[in-house]
Length: 251
Image (cartoon, rainbow, N blue to C red; front, side, top):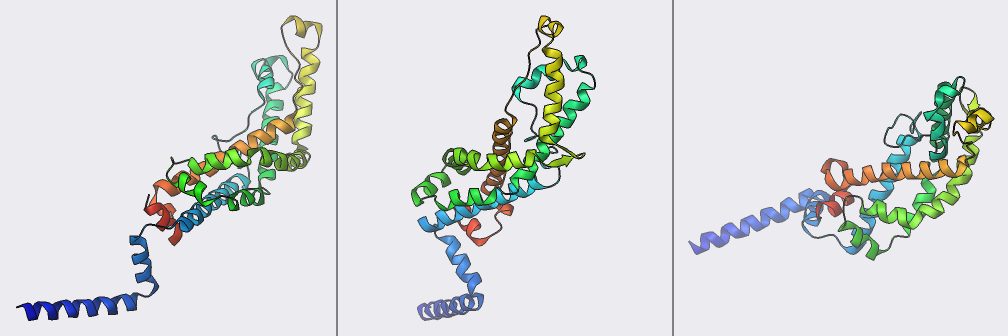
């Protein structure tokens, strides 16, 4: 019986060796999946996930009406301009002017976001092994939070010039965001600045739209990146490469 047992074991071992050989890279992949990922793999996997999230987020927002059609990131009027929407009836054609301004500033953000990928790539490639290990053990938005803390000031500086150019483009109804905004605020200020307007407690609006729109556009992009990060962390179907499957499958 012992002899039969040893023969059977030898046959099984031979079959396993042959089987692994025939599986080639597939067999290696299965064996690789069984072991914990290395620090280098964790770092590479997180960078791959974050870059994938960035690219997918940019693609969604850069599509036609990307910001405007997405309620999660749609950009409204600045806080200082809420006085206009609250008193819209006091402004001739006010609602139409507000709608035009909102559509135009969202169109400017959509136009500007197309150039954002290289800015994110520089930040992603600088992530250290230690950073990556901490992020992997974090919550579903840990990478995005880290990324936001490390890059937002630089992103705003670099993104502002793109926003300014986009604001001056005629993107909606042959009207630029700058023109639409200036028309809205100038008409409002002409009402709020009168004796009657001041007596009614109305205030003029003099907001730097470039700074406001830059903040909103960058924040909106982080929202989309965070969504993609959560997908990769929580859904196996979103891990579309072997490295992502290996790194996030061992969390």
